[in-house]
Image 1 (cartoon, rainbow, N blue to C red):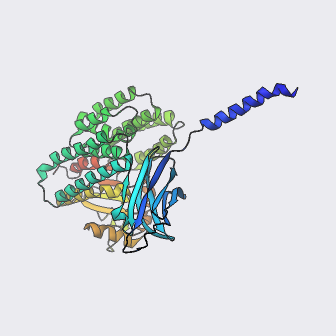
Image 2 (cartoon, rainbow, N blue to C red):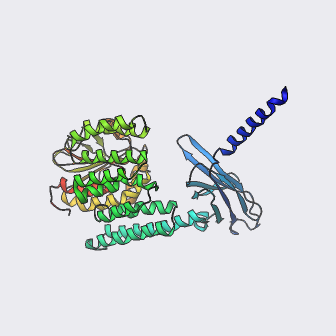
Image 3 (cartoon, helix red, strand yellow):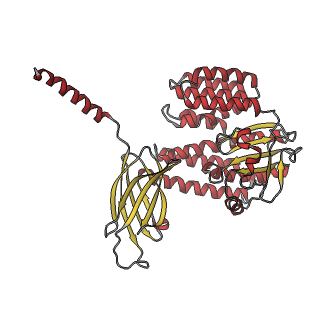
Length: 453
């Protein structure tokens, strides 16, 4: 009697083993290398005991993804296990003392080779792999581009050369996408290449966007850039038609949701407030229960429609600057101004800062006022940030944003967030995150000019 149950037991075991084996493994990478010590510090040539640790940090704390200790030759190796491809902090320590840190890219099935010497590890380090080597190419191009930006800001290069420079550097970044495909460097280069074209070579930007593979995740991230370019190139009706055509050629629900969201934003930005309200209502019905991001976005956008739409009066605020001056929407009455709320350690804000400097230097001559409201808690950090960059527009002192409950009243969901306000105190537009490109095109409205200076 017992033997008839044997096939059932075996079947259950097979199913259980299959279920275990079918569970997807986390991405893994081989990490190996050699770290030595300068003879000026240690002449024993014993390089053992140097710890190499790669961690993941988030709001909940830190996890160790890789840890190895060198042998007497300074060699180490092991497997890093992580959740997704990214740049992770790598810590070099010995005898419990942190000596240096660097960023390292971990990608599935990649082999990362690390060589360097302490105590000057940051200067001597060579980190190679398909991903890391590609990223170093990207960094070299980005550093050279930033150097050119500084020349432009300092007036070394003629202003009329800027459009051709932008096109040249856009092509350079785009070439990294082609030479190092499917890497983090390729993704960042693609974003840079397209952002540079925004507002100057919009049709070229659209062509590049349309050339992206339908499965490329960058299509989601760059959709707003492309639809804004379409609005400038073809007008509101043309842009709506372009968005609808993108939706028709996609069967990805998330992408369609993003495009629908962009459609509503275009209507909002074009002061078609009633139509934006109507389409937002349909959006909620279609997507609120399908995507958490959609529901959160709809709630925030509803607030903006009700309180922060173009043409509405800027809500009351008051801050005290690092120099002790009081600035409010009343003291700025009769002056066009740009108010930005950000964290100074924010990577996006730091990457945009050179462009914001250029905007300030150009438009302050036409009466534009800048006000920055940091959410940082350290007065030393705030002062040091702007002193190092040589800029002296008004900056709120630490914690000043709390006085007017600004984060709530201005619906700050992401940083940086900016507001461009005309001389009558009316909102021209709210800019979130990467919307700096649109800001340049809107500045002429603040000065009531038919063309940009």
